[in-house]
Image (cartoon, rainbow, N blue to C red; front, side, top):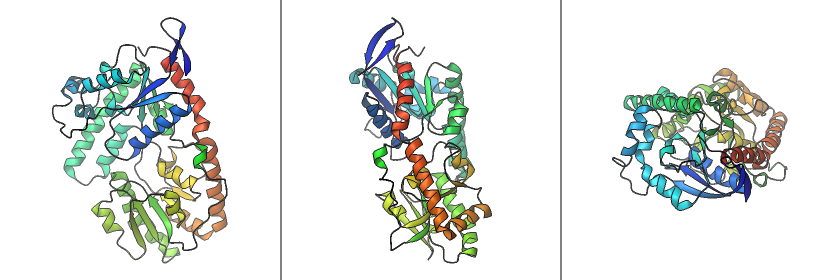
Length: 384
């Protein structure tokens, strides 16, 4: 149990139970962040309660009518129309929590939280920018209109929360945290998730030269695969004919399937163990033209001891010292891949440096004291 000051009385109040409020609908970045909060708060000494504002029923229309006016005012975002504020109030009351961590603005509406309940808002990333980028890459006109509408709505709410300064806030990506005026809390992993430091090595039956992994129905990832297949790999194969590519992830779109129909490319529709997949590849890449937040695929590759080539926008989610080869999409990106494939010793050195940096700077143990301090400050004072 953690003791924090009670702001109103100057005394001490026992605070040990935190509710993690979210509106996660499927596996992806938000679900990873929810699991991360549970893990890091447990390591920090808190109890946690999972509070999903989305009820089991699939019917959406009419469920969140109590959010219509706040959405119009810009103090909540349109996604809150999918859940009822009364449900949130009931969840908080039943859970008996002393404070809340709200994961993304999709689950944020403080009107249904008891007065004085401390709230820590985790943007995760700038959803306004994420939606704007989806509009830029989605080839379906109706979807582009929808993405742009959501981008404008999130811009209003993000600005309102930043200017209101009533809540403590965090974000997972370094640049996003700076823009939002929030604390930077990257996705981390316990040190036990790293191996003993010895290189697990590449499998004798090495399958692929280049690996891209990610959720394969996410528009920026689809765009990245398109760029990788149509612009980068042809340049790589000019120098190294026959260079092979693996694209792996959940929910591949029809375009992804078309792009990977080649003798030198293979699609892995979902995978259970990233390290086993990475052990069959030589170089991991993240050629995203559009990205927000922190790309978990970079941490996965670092933990698996694979050298990486990423674009500047991907690197901006991390600290500047993270050992990566960084290049814009185009010939220079292809050139970095060729250099790593042609220099196994240099590639191994880069991979080992990234593994060591991730273990030291992106372990949960490295961040837990700072996260505990920030949360104790939030829990020790009323948000308004």
